[in-house]
Image (cartoon, rainbow, N blue to C red; front, side):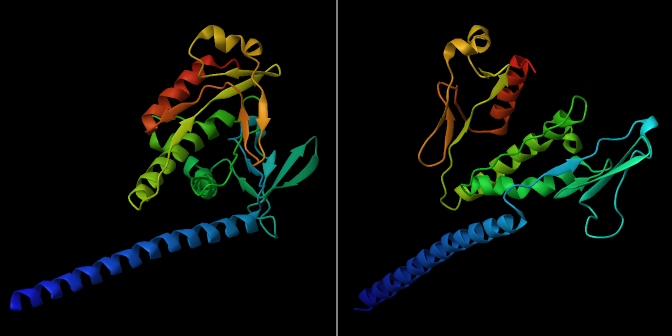
Length: 244
């Protein structure tokens, strides 16, 4: 009888622990859902579409051509240009002066990377004239930590965060595709042969939109990726295939 009583006691204890574990796991899931909701609310308050300006280091003959407001609502958001004694003022959601580091810029957009992991659609692109620093901002030099651009840093965040969430039961599948539009022709930068890359028109890539708002390019090469190294290898391959 005593052995049976101990067995029942241990059984009840085990059931109680199992119940607590289930409740704790549910709290984690509920907490993650709440975090996603609050995170998205913050980004919506900041603005779903934001425009940042990054000023490249000035040349020796450009000192005084660029200045920044030191008072008022445009501090950190405005830039003033001087041309032929005429001053022009511009306002953005954020302005990075010439002293801003790669880390400074990434910190401002890292929340968007988290939104992508949360399931939201995100697009980040750089626009500017030749030599303005687009490639430096987006790619930088991945060989040096302080020189890594937005793409390498975003990849690190994506894989690190997904690994953490996988331990909590989340499942992720990473895929990569890369293209460029040159002379109004879509070119698949991950195509397996040089001929198919160059003959983009013959492949008749088409941009399609489905009922859920997803945008896809037909017949574009899609590669499953499982690590930063795999994506880095694809980026190098794509860079070698670019015309621009």
